[in-house]
Length: 235
Ligand code: URA
Image (cartoon, rainbow, N blue to C red; front, side, top):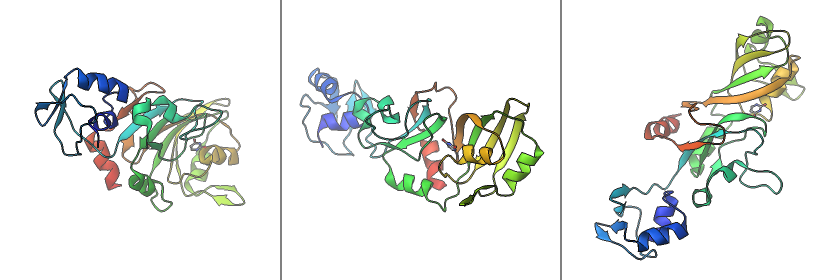
């Protein structure tokens, strides 16, 4: 591949920024200054920028703190999507693993690793997903039991047993942690609706071993660490 592609894939800059950086003499290939952005390199070539080694990784993994109001999609004619939150040079080839509703916030994994995505989303994988939910009514032990015993959401869908941990309960606003092992359309909203309450706020806190980094503000993302990636691959 071209040297500027190698570096842009790794998020060092856009192709036009990289042309300037390379022509400016900051880049070395196998220890030798490289001035040609089109120079051919491969994934194992030792490339440094300002003496820092840039390792080529075929797959990229990011956690995004999804804000409200953006779609979990790659592109949309009308609405902003989660990929619009990433700069153009790293947007190519990445996609969200699964969907959160437009108004749901929190943890969303973004990657270009189709194999991992497929494994995480496959119906048989039953990975725990933990959400913080606020609802507009009181939550009681009856709700906990109903979630635990496999809630009949509607004629066509009975949820797998889910865990409801009430954080606070009041007649007009309650808060709870919910753990589900499926990912059906609007699942949590529909589960609460089936018990007579409406979700007013929903945030995903974790997916399997991957926990939302609370230092990320809504709309911010970061690369996963090596141990976060390895743990996900073990799920
Ligand atoms: N359940 C929902 O209802 N919405 C989401 O976005 C995720 C889970």
